[in-house]
Length: 241
View 1 (spheres, rainbow, N blue to C red):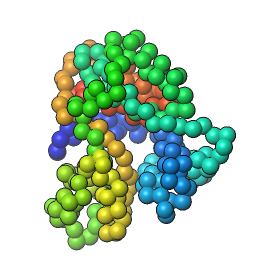
View 2: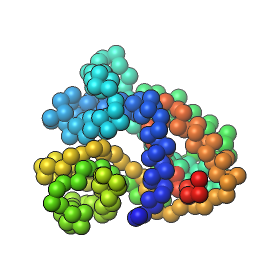
View 3: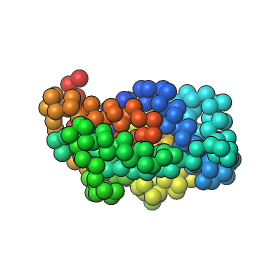
View 4: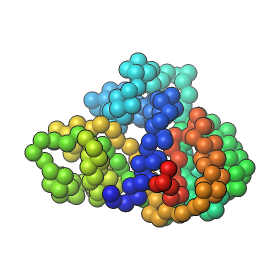
């Protein structure tokens, strides 16, 4: 079902499986968005769509409100979004997205994880050619609009793939067209369930069970780090499990 569908599905299920980490991740994103564009979702499109994500993850309303309030709290942590890139064991490319108030601490941790598990931290931008940076929207189908018609409508807005997924439709579009896609969907009455950025590998690398187990030990280190928001890699998932 489309480009690297198995990879995306497995990543999504694993990432959203831990509710507390999901709340932490979305909370940081909300704080960053509110600080950059203001605390009013009516005038801050990025904050508005993150609140959709929070709702989809069943994040409590008071937790969302606290995350927004942190943006105007002078004593609150000042989060910065940073991307780290490197190679894990067996040449698996790994991109780590973090939101941190202490880059020195976070880069030291990330470098340590790579080094201790047979990998190397690279320079920023060194792996960009291996991944397509995409805007990904989940929406509710609208009566009277087919998937094919929707795809034709959205081509001019940078959407290059539309996939029905059970009771939802998943849209993949250009990273830089996120705001335009969001605007179209809102103005045309589509219910946005969630919206985020994904780094889709343009080539997947197969590993055996033993190699995969070693790589996953490294990935788990990133996923257990409170500063890490997302981890992307080009390891081929084993569909037999």
